[in-house]
Image 1 (spheres, rainbow, N blue to C red):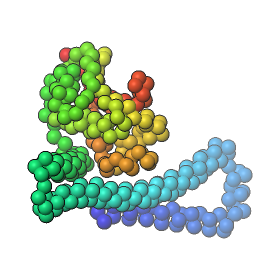
Image 2: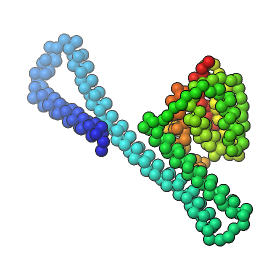
Image 3: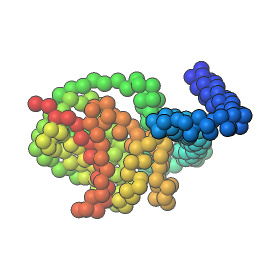
Image 4: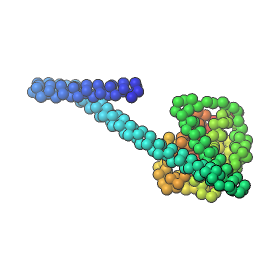
Length: 299
C-alpha cells in the first residue's frame, strides 16, 4: 500500500469514527433532555429554528457525501482490479498468438527442407508476427510514458495537407486521400504520425474490405486530419468510452480483432498535449465511422 493510499484510508476511518461518535452523543443528549429541548424549541424564534434545521440538513448531507465517496472508492477499486485482470488476459492472448505462429514457422524451417518460394513465405510471416509484437510493445511503452507524464514533444510548424499526403505515400497499403485548404499548426510529427497509425490500423481492422479514407484541411481556426472506415458505426453509448484505457466495445467483431484497448487512449492523449481534440462521428457517404483530429491553426 502506498503512503497516499494509507493516509487516505486513515483519514477516512477517523472521519467515520468522529461522525459515529457525534451521532451517539447527539442521540444521548436528545433522549436525556427531551423536555428541555422541546421547551427551548417552542421559545426559539423562527430564525433560530431555520438555523438549526439548516445545520441539521448540512450535517446529514455531509454524512451522505462521505458514505457516497466511500462507495465510489470501492467501485473504482473493483473496476481497477477488473481492468488489471482483463489487461493480463488480453496481453496473454495478444502475445501468445504471434509467438505460436513464429514457433510453428521456425520449427518447419528447421525440421524439413522447403522450396525457396515457401521459405520466403514463412520468413515473411515470421517478420509480420514480430512486427505485430513490436507494435504492441511500442503501444505499452507509449502508454507508460503518458501515465508518467514523460511524453516528449518536439514541436514544428507543419502544413497539414502536406504532412497527411506524406503519411499516405509512406503507408504500406492503399489509402484514399482527400486534400482540402492548406493550413499550418505546431505539431510533433512523430507523435501525430503515431496517432494516425493507430487510427488507420483500426480503420483497416474494422472497415470490412473498404479502403480507409484520410482527409486533411484547414477550417477557420483549426486544421483537421480525419480517418474514415467503412465498417459498422460506433454506437453513441460507446463513442466516449472508446478513448478510455483498455476499453474495447463488447461485441463479436471487436473480439475477433487483436488489440488491448490502448490505441485510441493514446490518440486522445497525443491530441490533448497538442491542445487539440479528437471527435468520432458516424459517416454517411460511404457509411462508416469518422475520426477527426483537430489542432489549433497558426499563421
